[in-house]
Length: 475
Image (cartoon, rainbow, N blue to C red; front, side):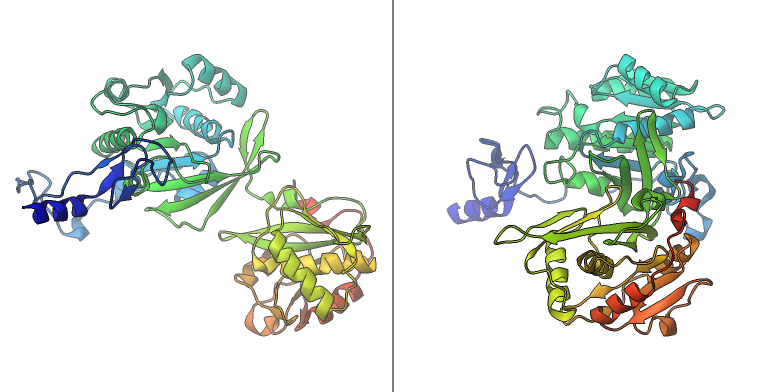
């Protein structure tokens, strides 16, 4: 009997009531959320207790007879959000929007609710658990989201929220946020594992039964993950993350899970004093529009999902007064920069050992992919030799430790974006013209080694133009 009991206990294990962390033996402190006294013994698994029931009117049918028109995505009126969602909101879909505090989650969803509420016969129910209805009304006036079909309700009780849904019969449901709603039928404080699981399950059920899209705002932990149980991300249909530096206005919307579309699309938004504005062509945000180009600048084209973005890299190289020269970055990965500087010094004979190097991006862009290595190296080489690069030149390629220039993913899309923005020369890996289609008006300067790329870039200088080519993009 004792042996059987111990085996059952080992199978059941212990779980934290706050975050859901599990362990094989009891501990006083949770290893995930570091809370004391929250680890309890989980219920031992038992045999199935559910028996078969009649399917009623929902009997299985051949897949070819299923009506798909009712499940078509409907545009939200925000093109960048529709891009990430895969065309719009699908009836009955549940979308979880997560992000750090102040990144613009509530502003974005209130703007979407206001746009949807202007449609004829629309009833958008916006449930706020963090603010009063008056506070939401003030923000709606500021961003121009006041609409006749937008209904506001300040509720923190799950039963009251479900009652509001039954009374108003909305066409779209917005809940801000899911961690502030609690059910009296479940133990635990709002935001706990049991409460979040119960609230999410109830909202998903009502969305599926009524066929209405539900948009849920979710908090994130200090590590950037969605707060609450991991099962929350499995229950919903779409999980979106809003990223952005609090010191810049750019906000990027990405989908880490999407049952109705791709997960490699990125939506760009501009967070302003009057709300959040979508950016259909954000490339101009990351390139300066000065009248003249100075040494130490080079433009590259990065890929955010499947979207190419032109980004300017700026470098400054000055004599160092320290025994260990400074290596300061902003928007560029510091370890990647250290590798590029080592290769440039060893393979391209650039004098960098006794100089401070500062590398930054324009507009708060973050460049972490290897495809920007060549642009970083050329910007540093330009600053170190005090030779200006061409105003119509871009650089695309990864730099290896041997100094070789490697090809990058999506090179054809990057070249097409560079040509569209008015660039005429592109320093690319050797063999690009044979493997990629070259856009009209774009000359490829192929280089197999970093030293060769530096020579080609400095020799391809052009007369400074009154404005950068990107000035025509309208930003």
